[in-house]
Length: 271
Image (cartoon, rainbow, N blue to C red):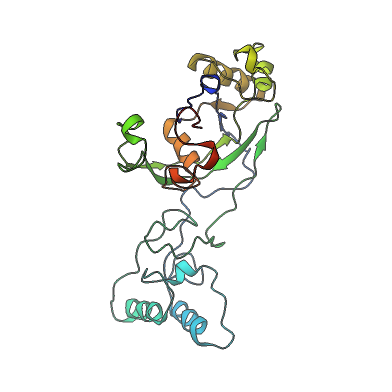
């Protein structure tokens, strides 16, 4: 979790992770949904002559067919869909040409530099399950499996002060999980723990609970699990950063530090 410089705002309890068991997931969720470059028609990963014909039709017909997923039609991963993609597939199918580049590791996530498009290919991807709301009114949202860069770049402002152990490294979240959309409020914490550790001048049932220990937080999760009949726990460091980054690679999910605006990036006004 990022450091919060205002002492009154430190040690907030983040939204807990909900581990769903049994049949709570009504619809299956693909943990490694993939689509294949060149499989323009969505034939389960099979590349056929008709895929190249769809590309040519899209490029040259007066009323071209819509490409369901442009990134799949970018067979040679050049960053655009053009005649070379159709020729690339013909070469692969009939002249022992190279196989199209590897499929995306996750549905809708293109990790290659061209970033042609983030498309959801219905033939391979299940829609994410809806948020879960428990008896305390906590809303938990689903985060799918994925891979991201954990840590910070050496050139990131402030890294020399706080990030000496933040060497960038790839991390894979192999299983999806639910995470609280908001921090745990004081009212929700009191409903479970029957006490409020927040400093009196900051007490408000709608504000995040603060000034609690790791033992307090894990005990809250344990009691909440008993009450709800579902397994809750604190997020791991990797899960927390994966969620906070929201697919970004910048210092903040909304951009670089220069975009902080009026709220500020440096003490005493850092958030």
